[in-house]
Amino acid sequence: MATPLNPRQNFLKGIVKENPVFVMLLGMCPTLGVTSSAFNGLGMGLATLFVLLMSNLVVSLVKSQIPSKVRIPAFIVIIASFVTVVEMVLEAYIPFLYEQLGIFIPLIVVNCVILGRAEAFASKNKLGASLLDALGMGLGFTMALTVLGATREILGNGSLFELRFFSEDAQTILLFILPPGAFIALAYLTLVFNRLTRKVA
Amino acid sequence: MKKKESTLLNMAVVLFVITLASGLSLGYVNDLTAGPKAAAKLAKKVAALKGVLPSFDNNPVDEAWKVPSSWAKDSIEIYPARGPEGFVGAAVTGASDKGYNGLVRLMVGFEPDGTIRNIAVLEQKETPGLGTKMTGEKFMKQFRGKNPSDFELKPRKDGGEVDALAGATISTRAFSEATREAYDTYMKQRQTLTENEH
Image (cartoon, rainbow over all chains, first blue to last red; front, side, top):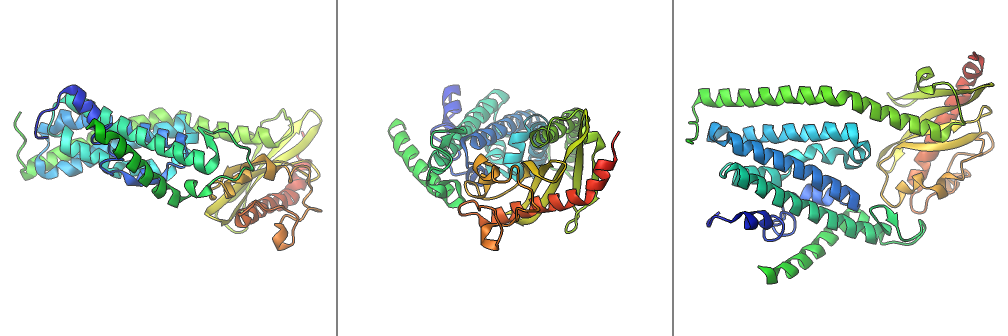
């Protein structure tokens, strides 16, 4: 945070220059774990976006009240509370997504993107800037997970958002919805992403 | 604003306040979502029942009972269905832990004579694209209208009559075993089911 960013740069950095997945390679556990379909990627991305937004909001509001020696446990309690809220709401209203994401919902607590933003940004910046930062980072994360999920679903299952364009019996590259496919797809997408954004930056 | 100093008292008070606020708000949200959560679970069960049972006019969920499973702490649920002319069939859950990735739980709908009407998968964690095809029409249709008394519920590899999913014999084995558990339970409970006429 050497030079102060204007609001536009602050918002866009999470999507392009400091994209949490493709550039900073943070939050790899949900990134690799749940992106076997575009819908799962999108769902996980939006759940993370919500938690990120709320935790940046609260952390930026209470930052001056938290003694610095206990700031990490304080942040974690705040984040864990919102994750639990997300878990309960998903179970009640979107049970299908709740079952698909399974253990990865509670694991949002340890997503380092969220604690990272709380520690590196929200605890040092004003409310407005923190919300913009969360929105940018969250959307960047959601976009990355959806693109990764879509790639894997198209190659591995012959469908996109569960709309099939091949029959159920068609031979697809199954590897891509199995765990190794996550690593391969992520590596190539990171390559493409950085190639494309190098010119912009 | 100045940062609070890290004195012992400050730290204890701040952490206490944060955990208290967090606990209270989570309790509140839990209360709010308890109703919808139960409703969502029930809706899923009813949807599965409607899919496997012939049309009924009683409430199978209210009349259901449980028997202990022979191998697990899990229990087997039995949902009787009645039409205007009495007993028309029952849905029975069955499970197997021999899946590729843990438990496979099914709900099997039976005609009164024990013929399989339809099967719904309640729970499975099989390999995406291989074992998960057990929910697909192509695999499922071989069970419909079959009576397990003359249809050996085992993959062909094990000497049975079930066509295995390509590349997922283990998942097929678990599916067959779960169906067999449901069938065995149904046959044991059939007396009670048909006697309990209104």
